[in-house]
Length: 466
Ligand code: NAP
Image (cartoon, rainbow, N blue to C red):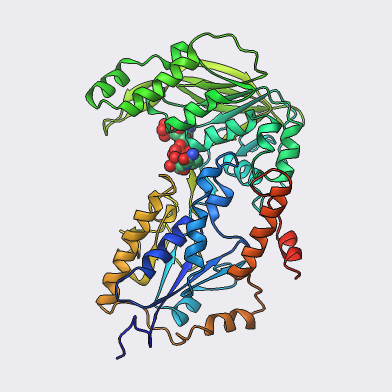
């Protein structure tokens, strides 16, 4: 049998999803020593970069610079990018088996976790994920409407997504106009009446998931004052003991920022971003038309759980807060793919260090790998996905050496494009994406912005003349 991974018989890899993990997998495959590989990346969206384009906040442009690396990877002749090709609709697991030696799933976490409180379905109660996708110009969310004709918004959760949402609601139109926020969101936020945004954490400030630079940043907003309540940033005995047992300079610095915000200070700024701790949502109430009118919160106390971590336990003290908007920002969740094992509870593809496994037998699924949030859950920063991808590709390399990969019947490089064409799938190759990219940047330059995004599939198709 011919050796796989040579110029005559290149290793053919499919990657489903072209967010950071997809590109890190491609890069790790290309770097396998002594192995000649071809990597095809498929994305259901007409644009690459996934969470970097549609998740990273528009006012965090420096984070988006990582796309230069991804573009370099995509420009390698051994890599092809197929935009607008949906796994399960345009391309199936059987197609993968017929054309590739292995597949890596890097589809991230596309939906949100729910609060499971009454009133969550009311108009004006939204998953933060949708708001984020909307202001970032995700084509699936460009027609969503958020009613910003209210003075108070409540964001449940104190992770980095929650703080992104709160910050975007508190930025002035002038601040937003310098970013690559979607035009429809810029226009809506220009008219926003929101004056106060509450960020609500169920545990205390030491347990808050947001990172220090994000907490510091909200102290520097042009026209919004960051505020906390002195009693809520004061540590309880259990948190003090936890911090004493495991001192952390990062946590000390986070507490210092929050204490500054809790120090009474005069402010002439017109908006407030208010940190609340030790509070959980109980129910969301609505008006006669079915729109959010307020939220009932319960005060929590911290207790030690069986695993030793500090958990929130509800007391009998409640607080009713008037608000016209509620965002739940309590974590993302992965979505299953047709024909691929999935654990609905954790929202992940079951895997052993990146090798997809059959949940019943725990045996590896031949030639199938996962990387990124669909592998390990929604945690970490963008760079975390590089090491995660390297680990998965290490498993793939070991399986290549052991001869345990798929044996495609049509391994020629042209076969997959021919198959998609025969199905009438019109995909966007990377050089067409670079045209879209150039137009967006050009429009941005004219407007003093990093780019002006195209936010619908139609607009992109039109720009490409198709
Ligand atoms: P996250 O960091 O896991 O935060 C989730 C928050 O939701 C936590 O405060 C959690 O509190 C809370 N929560 C969970 N269930 C809850 C419930 N039932 N009721 C009330 N609160 C609840 O998730 P994320 O903010 O979605 O971020 C996902 C990942 O992306 C993180 O790794 C994050 O750092 C990263 N990210 C980074 C940036 C950045 O670097 N600027 C920006 C965006 C996202 P408990 O701790 O009590 O569970």
